[in-house]
Amino acid sequence: MDIKTYILHCKSLTDRHALMVHQINRHNFSNVIWYTDHDANEQIDTDISDVYEGMRPEIFTQKVKVGGWDVTGSPPRTLNSAEISLTTKLGKVLEEIGRGNEEYALILEDDAILINNFSNLFDIYLKETPDDWDVIYMGDCANLHARNVTHKQLAYKVDHPASKGCDSILIKKSAAATIASTYFPFDLCSDWEIGYQQAYHDLNIYWWEPNIVTQGSQNGTFESTLR
Image (cartoon, rainbow, N blue to C red; front, top):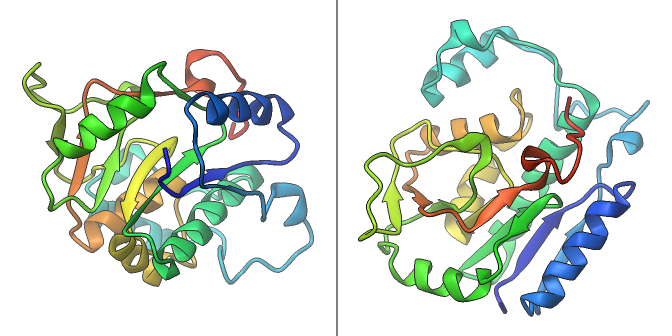
């Protein structure tokens, strides 16, 4: 696994760090960047209006509409400090990928759990994915799955809204740069914000099935820090 990989990590979550280090070593990742800036406690009493201006109902409503979600089921709300931190980290990493030299990069949240043969399956899945992809989701966040999954297909192009959590995202440099250009200031939590951005820029989104990543805060390995 020589693909450039960014891990969105909160420095205080040492149990997540330990498990992720184990996985990195197990799967022979060779190009890893731990992104630890903008932890929630670092944003206290700090002006963050350049990344998040607080609840803006009219913009929230427009973003949800463009993203394809039902506004009535998702009323505008102010994000908590953990959500602001994670969403900021994601946006900053997208900026770095967009400025980088690699054709694409992998983003993992620090609670991502890779299946045993992840590195082998990653190569197989990527070869089976049409070349027009901009963003690929490979996890099972919220138990969301592509429609009409068959054993003959691994990559499924998904209509917007097409985000499914940010535990594991493969993104092309061009797509990262495009999203980063309109990402800040954000109004939605990370998975919703990137979902809106993907729809706004009409990017090609693929989901991999069966999933090769699960989310530790979803399967009980870790407690969620966002709620």
